[in-house]
Image 1 (cartoon, rainbow, N blue to C red):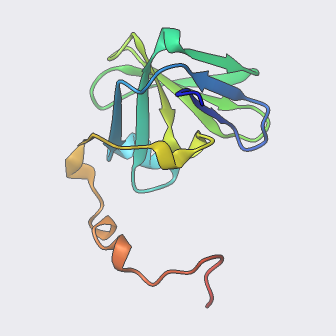
Image 2 (cartoon, one colour):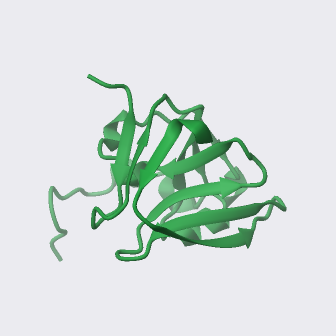
Length: 137
């Protein structure tokens, strides 16, 4: 059994493998991550750049972050799935998001950042009524 973390985009055109454990796994509450993921936060796994291999053609765009860094976000040009992030703020690292992993159950966040941006309604999610599949209205 390998310790690699591997994942892909939704359509399978992009595949990646990280040959090590993440350096850090951070839940980010910044507004950019909320906008980018379309959710309340992003769960970001930081790996050393030399530990990841990516197959497939990525598209990218750059945006200045609230911290003043330039963030390059990559995505699949076929299905639009977000694949990686690179930031001038952590130049030796690459970020992949938990949702793109083939086995996201391996994720163990060790910290969170931009906590003032935490959305109040995330605190009670575990207490909400649950459905095994699609919700019934």
